[in-house]
Image 1 (tube, rainbow, N blue to C red):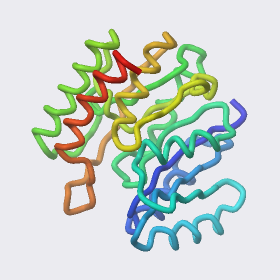
Image 2 (cartoon, helix red, strand yellow):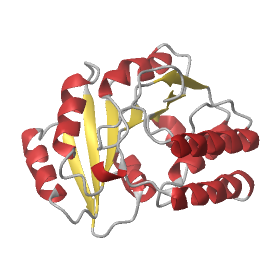
Image 3 (cartoon, rainbow, N blue to C red):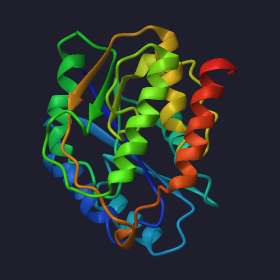
Length: 232
């Protein structure tokens, strides 16, 4: 692998994004890497933080901006169009996931066994104890997705997804918000590529710390699973 592309959608993460980028650059695997950040119309001080980050890492960080908030899926669509690397990994900016897990995530691809790797928060790694109903919702959505896709994932909604760049070619992401997760899973499943899953740690936030996913997003995810598996 000549270059690892890390894509980071950001929305109103003024208090988190600087540390998130520091960890990606300092703690991630010792490989040549680029970080592609998309500021999805932030209205706090995120833009100023990102400008300082870009100046600090002029050779390895590129920043793009949406003029208005369009959602995680839209931000990733922009980022995927800009990546230059051989392998692409999705990284949130909220510090719920640790770049220290990159080595584990990349191993099946670097070994030649996998084309896509999913992390899993439910496979036995250390995690912060938070909301029971979020856990139930995640397991329900994963099970529903598996029923349609005939996969046996344990955590379809996980942030950490890694792709060979050629796998992403030809996939058109339509979802603008959190529907990205079931959409990309449906489209990856139809490609019949080699998918692996590895455990990752999880330091989840609560709503007072800026968590954005709510129950409405769960209902929309159900609709996305059905639509993208059957009609798109």
